[in-house]
Image (cartoon, rainbow, N blue to C red; front, side, top):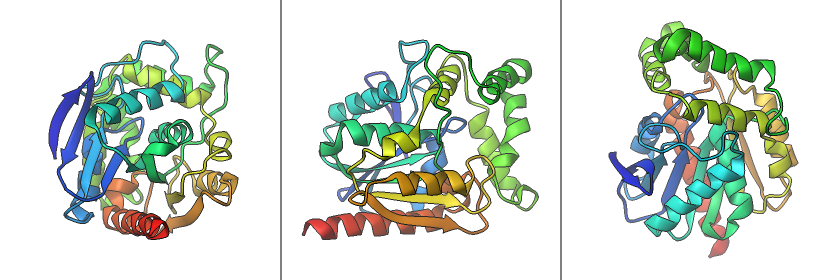
Length: 271
């Protein structure tokens, strides 16, 4: 996948002439986390994975405490500049908050939505004190630095990490690239997020996927989001065995199969 920068947003692309899938990574990840997924998707599919504002080649957002709608606005500017037309959107972890907000505000651009390892958010008011779990993220990054931060946290994203050292190393490498102020902005957005509340208002066909052994965003969170979806938007709920939080890296073939099936279902319903 090649790297590009458009309007201050970095993104990677696997070119294709078929359906378009846009991928949004999590709070401790990067676009390369979707490379394994892209390798298992149909050859003609165009795959675009952005860098969250403040990550990689993407400039940070202007607000000190951005909310999901600010990130969705940045995504709208990117896809508008790329002239994508209608596309499919996949969000992982923090990316589920952005993807759902985008679907709520720009449903006319979306064929369908796949939410993976749902980050529910903490529902606090922007500008208030951060919850302890959110503040600990910032404190750990300041105390340990990006490399130490990644070493301390990466293994939690992988089911049975001792048996998957290469996968843990890949997750750790991506996490070690986080930086301020982008990471702090993402933590604040996560703190103020309410994914289930957004899901209740969605009309875009939505599939939910989660690893059965996810200890970062446990399956109950994803089940709650699936249950919150209106019947018109509620598609499948997929629980992946022997898989932790890093679904696009630990179970890329299964996620590709589910995503491809969802896309075909969405296209079939319009025919």
